[in-house]
Length: 231
Image 1 (tube, rainbow, N blue to C red):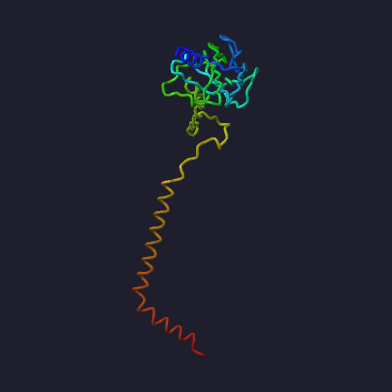
Image 2 (cartoon, one colour; image 1 turned 180 degrees about the vertical axis):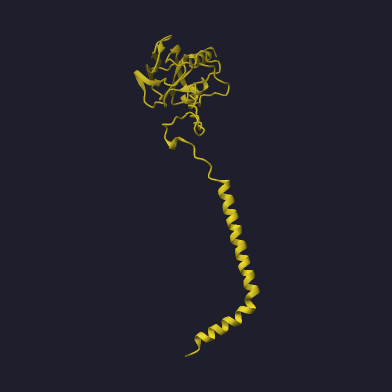
């Protein structure tokens, strides 16, 4: 029973299996970084499945992580493990994690603490919300840190029309004046009176024709017969 307990303790607490390497060597702990950061170390195992690089806030009480890149399916016994593009991420102190997955589903981890990111961003890093999770993308991490959003420029104010003759001298062109109203009351009045006059004249002519028609029609008939009568 004593040997069984010793075996279980070794299996549970030994971070690496024989011939396995999971380590981070760069950047160094407490180093200031900016731009595209090369992350170096090793990730190799006889039971290698993949390795993942992630970053989180330092400290990270909610255990929230954001992927630095896609999972890598080829082991790296030593060298550059990935590139961390920090453009758009708010300045602050961050934590980098390497997780090496074995074929049986278990994994080993390595960390770099207190990595100071300084890209010149005016917004300091903020603590992540409790709803954040490992499924968030780096863009989601940027949103969580409260990156400033540039507002669109204000609309151009409309020009104010200048009243006719205001602020202009005798040498200004006529096209600069505001055109006068198209409606003219005197013109409308004259047209209205003219229309009434023609209407009354038409009614008078029609009335006279109605009154004189019985006397005029016989004379017109005789005149027409005399004209048509052969000579």
